[in-house]
Image 1: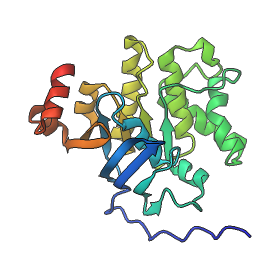
Image 2: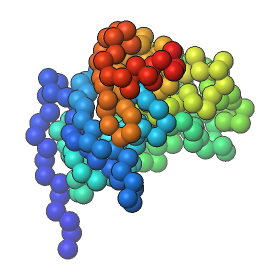
Image 3: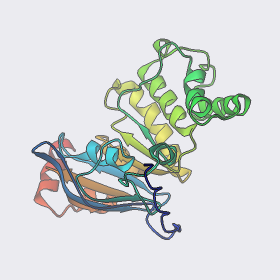
Image 4: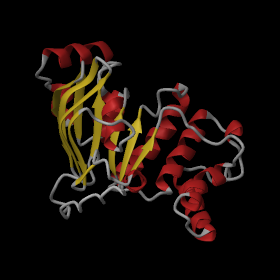
Length: 257
């Protein structure tokens, strides 16, 4: 017997959070990674999630586009419950793009081909239209002239920018970035951060897990600090960095600033 279609979500309006995370728990076996996290993200906001390794940051954003199922709680994107078993996950991931620490480019495909693949093969869009869009996106991430280069011919920072262009080719409403500079050499970090900064300034809703504190301070509308599976503190950047309230936040910032 076919599964019942997912019920229509209440119509979302821009005055509501585009993403709402409510009391989210996630366990892997007996180990509880997320212990009741909640946050609201509004359209056009840039949100940075910071904290020590193992604090649940990456797990949380992977839950936002259903790469990881939650154990308890609720996550909605434009009022649609992400963990509805009848949800079309492909449709969700068209709306919520994600870029990872590892570039995951196809090594036997050029930069242009990597950017074009999903719209053509998954969305069945017209090749000519996709190529035109892909070339514009490659220019947008400042890689004009590298369209026919293979990943092995590109630096780490260039490969990561191709990965960003590839995600943007699906025309998402929201972009998730999971420590996208962590595997890069220091000299290539800046070029990737500039690309993300431009997206945020253009009004793309961005959620970033990052260890780049200066970038977080300059770009984010709001900072969330996580530790041991909970959100310890959150505030606008100036308040968060200059006047942290919680002792754990003060200790963390004291170690890295």
